[in-house]
Length: 550
Image 1 (spheres, rainbow, N blue to C red):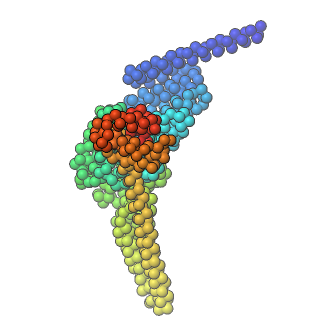
Image 2 (spheres, rainbow, N blue to C red):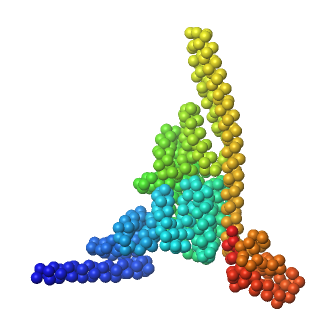
Image 3 (tube, rainbow, N blue to C red):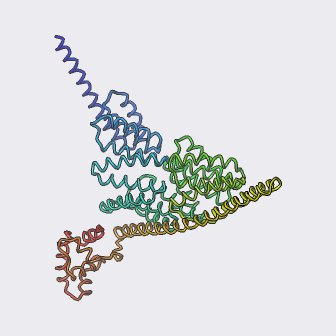
């Protein structure tokens, strides 16, 4: 009797669980429908009630993901991030959770961290998303994560790694003819160029990237963000009117979208423009408001940007102690978060402030750290300041030693002679140190200039490949017969290679026939044999085959 009674309760319990599961799946479907209908507030309200039920962890993960999506569309990045993290937590606790869901949540969490300026965490989440995408063999997601990692690594100063990721993403995007992704690749190229000092090239790439948006879809704020990138590039080359124009337009578009985070980031850029125009109070107000907003978040890159502007404002106003305190605070953030480029800027500002306070020894040490960081970031600059500070450091030391010598001379001529000898050794050592520094600096300059030229050549090649695919600029394609034939099972004859070279320049069959003095039928016969050897069926596929060759 007890056994039957027990079985009845078990059956009832299982049946109730099944009812809850069916109900939860129905409500999840309803949430998807609401998102498709852009009823985001309703999604949030219904997901709250659904999460109060006893549900499997996999179902909770899906609900948190959908609620995070709703917050994303409402431009509430912080709330969106919290829910994506919860979706990951519940999803990883339930083996029945689809890996694709977990991958998407890692990717979206990475995006949130990136938008909030917390770059090191963004890198870690995008890296996990990439591993999941590779496990799933999802080429679209693989390219997306690689493109995101390319942007982040370049922002963190690792241009080579960023470019490596970008090439891998680019090859996948070309194979898929994904204009939206290629537009983002161009934007990433532009950011790398800006960091390397090629701001004119960056502006050109960003304009082309904007053109891709007209033929594709992307993030809702892509247009506004790219306008802001153009404004930043103009700011870097000192064209302040153009910089302000693009930055203000970017800010206006972001406000319309309700993207408060990126809109406030534009305050920082506009503060930099104001500072360059000697609008000190305006710069202080914009940067101060941005700092107040971002200081309530976890340490992030945008807080560092706002601090750097405020430090420069304090410097211009003669508030050196305020500026130095903020520099030290910002150095700590940069060190903890790995923001090498901004750390370099901090040490440069610290050097100037210490000089103003006649603290030359500390200023020299600070500048040496700045110099090491600058070299490591492939941004070689002149050594004039170092030489000037070395001289000032020597003079300061000599004056101190002379005072000691004068006092010791009154006591003992012998002690003064010994002190003078030691001073001479110090000077000789400094001279040798300067000579050694000059030799090492010359070697580093030569090495980094070569490295920079190689990177620029790689960037130029990538840009040409994009132009060939999407602008039809096949005139710039050059075929090397031996290496091309080496990739084929049946090599092309001289005549076939000649006809293929003419065919990819968009010449018609009649024009090819006239060029090599044969009949049109002969050209068609050769093209058919060429297509068979290449394993393609038309010119377009032949061109794609040629471009895909290494």
